[in-house]
Amino acid sequence: MLDVGPDGLISDPRPLWIGEFGRIRDAAIDGAELLLLTNNTDGRGTPSGDDDRLLSVRLVEAAP
Image (cartoon, rainbow, N blue to C red; front, side, top):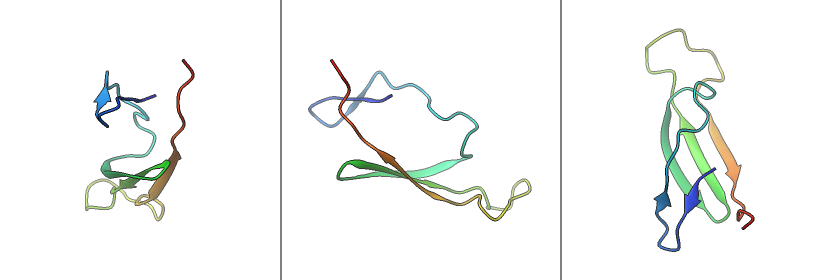
């Protein structure tokens, strides 16, 4: 969970998805979606065909 203040800044940041998607190289917000770009095929390790992905996370307002 991310807490985003009225100024658009994240408060109380905590790590999410540790080890789940590999390296997250970029993030952007598009409307009600958080878009994440992974990059795991940069020559390190043993990449597979689905390593580089564009992930979409729906943003919802947290209950009080």
